[in-house]
Length: 180
Image 1 (cartoon, rainbow, N blue to C red):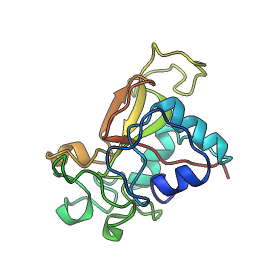
Image 2: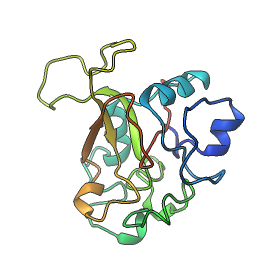
Image 3: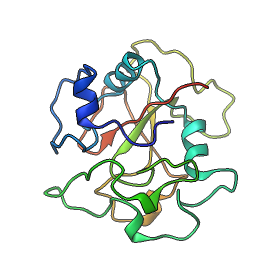
């Protein structure tokens, strides 16, 4: 899994395409206001893919099922959170103390991250990674919380969100992953 969310500079440099410009411009800020399809296509362009929900959670929680990427105790200084819309996102990876056990940064706060997985109940036997093509009648999973969350429960590594794949907003970004 990438150590940071995809930055606006990397997105532009590698030829990423998104319909709307980011609301919080800055070359080191994460890409946001992006659809699931745009994020997926960028990862493919890089020779990567969106992480699965299982991969993302493992990178954030580890084998000890941590509450937050850095441990089990909340630390307000370890995440980009509780910010106003005039502040918005921060530079990707700007809080090293908030890194997960694998070194991934911003897995709690900054932007919600698109995952490849369908948003399904944990106990389902359905295929979370089913190929739905260009279907927009499904929900995709979001993880990590964002800069505008003011409730620490929404920043736990186990917290989940969902959106339709053409949904976007100034709180949604992504990171890529590669199979080893």
